[in-house]
Length: 352
Image (tube, rainbow, N blue to C red; front, side, top):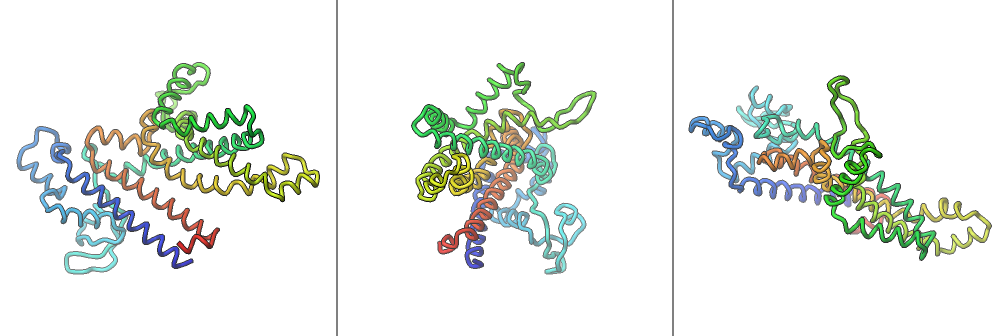
């Protein structure tokens, strides 16, 4: 088990290093000028030189790449100075020379070109919104998908089964951004007087009289739009797995003993049919973090997706890079935890 975990962790670190490398070189070969993006069009030569030095743009590309890796690493080498300590917020472990020391730090993602705020701080404010939206979408998709899958399996070949299968195929085929636009238009605009839901809104609303207050209802439409694709897949998985389990001998035995149909399905068949569903849920939770980008932008939901799209529009590359790296890190961690869970539940997985 230890060897298996070490292998998966090593593989995850290599994937993360690959993502970091691609992101760095992709955003460092773009033609946009960070100096102009930081100071605007009216910048004198001396000021431009100072900004280039502060951003490290006067150094060779490979040197900047090494410094970028050093900034992202939890264990890094930094100058032993008050300015460096304030900038990186590190804890000194031990000196490696008279000027430098080995330090322990949070990954440093730089500062936004537009607001000059630390990227880590901006992403930290937006991350809870994205995580909450993805979790709400996954809960909705899991509950509704399992329920529809059960109905379809118990009514195989009937109208309910046909409707469930047709809806799931449409859900899988429909892009998330199109589903978001459609749901926002129908439930947030045409039926606003009935639903009371808005086309746009975030987790917190601001009122001139009551101030800041929680607005959970603003999460309903984006969670519905984000959860349509996983709902469709979970419906088909539940239906297929449940149909297979219902053909097993122990199910026939349960019926022969006179157990009611609902007890046979809920207590005996369904628990054994949920294994592929659990696998899909753990995989889709990571997928939803990436899929939330356009959904957040469509519904004005304040999360990593929306601030990333806004940053792209304004060429705020440090913020975009930080968002991409954070999303990739979360995706890799979730997949690593899933692999570890598989290894504990099924010893055969450790052989691969």
